[in-house]
Length: 166
Image 1 (cartoon, one colour):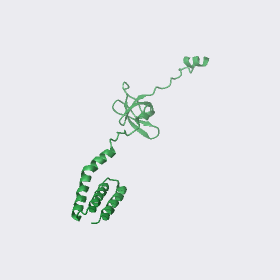
Image 2 (tube, rainbow, N blue to C red):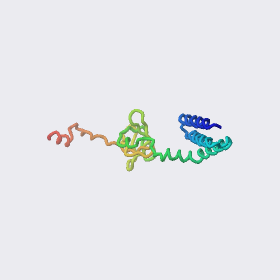
Image 3 (cartoon, helix red, strand yellow):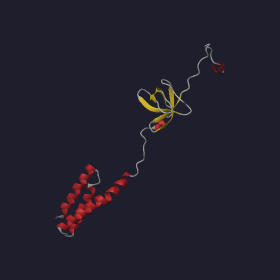
Image 4 (cartoon, rainbow, N blue to C red):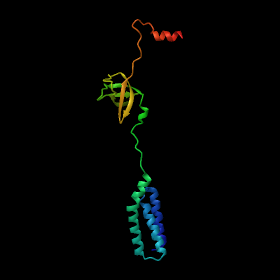
């Protein structure tokens, strides 16, 4: 078999590899180039084909898995959510939050499974809750303190009067 047929097969295999990018046809192309080099030394057609097949199989079976592992490397574990952005957000309790179950809503349509952060026992529906930390897809929350109420008489609080005097 003329050397240029092996080179043509190698080029076609490499062109196919650019389309598939599976690192399969790459090794077929390399084997074809080796067979082309052997044909230049007037090796018989059967020997050329035998070297081509054997080298293709060896490269695919032995080298390809190691190459895929080396190229892929160790992929870092990424969490499903950006949990850091949830901490300190305030949501509304939609299902009573206890140490075992509950649900909060952040914004208009973002719902999270929630658990009460000890020592809190229960946060009722409609109350506001602040996310303390997140584990997996569960937010651990604590109630948001209600603003200080005015005294029953409606008079300003002593701390407000002191602030106004300054």
